Amino acid sequence: MKGGKSKAETKKADSKLSIKKKETKPKPKPTKNEKAGKDPNKPKPPSAFFVFMEEFRKTYKEKFLNVTKSPLQSC
Image (cartoon, rainbow, N blue to C red; front, top):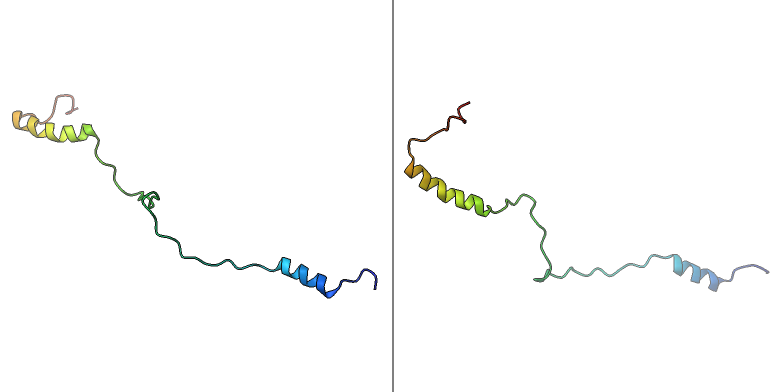
């Protein structure tokens, strides 16, 4: 029986080809260092200029009630 495979050799080959199942572990809860996913629809906070203009617009309208449009805006 030259060149024939013994039963022990085939068992070793089969064990190498078999797929090992990984243990399923539950995912740990995120810690403080890990970030949660960002919301792409979240609006950005207003910049300092917009915060300033909100306050300035109120005071400007109180001082100049009659001003609605400049001559350049009416074109």
